[in-house]
Image 1 (tube, rainbow, N blue to C red):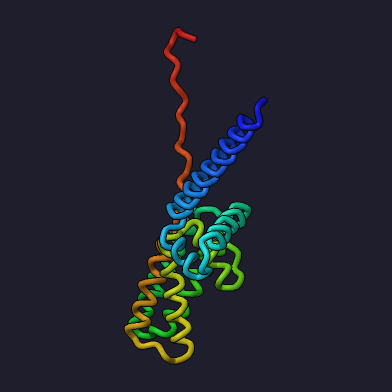
Image 2: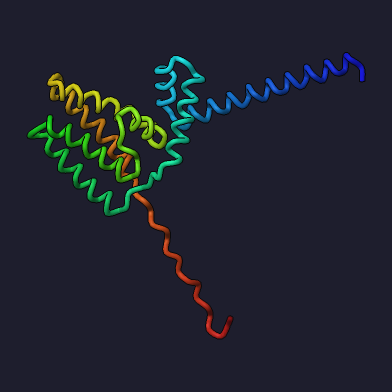
Length: 192
């Protein structure tokens, strides 16, 4: 084979690999943006590097896949919804305690669903995999709860914190849908 032909083949192969790699990276980025929504942009801003952010998001997804996250049963959902109503009604008389109780209740729902209750940053990362559209609410609510703990939150801040907790709480209340009951097919008389 001629030396020039070999070089052409090598160059074509390198270009094909580069084009394939570029297409794969663009598809990966699009899939991560779609899956994580606003959390994708948050990760990029936080790390300052698209590759690091994407690697972090992929690691989160793999970690959460190994967890045993499950929807709540109808009974659990009902019980948690009733508890939320009590917490929400507490806000009128004691907004400070309501925020603390809302934070605690969100943690209980997360635990019941199978999310590990570790440090806050890990919980946020885990929640972001399945609930990317409300994870910002969790961060905002937690920030307001910290302001409240430090004695620096206004009643309006606390109200906004409850709104954030409610958005996350509502998303977490996902209930397992029971499998449809399959009725046996009736057999016509005289036929088998």
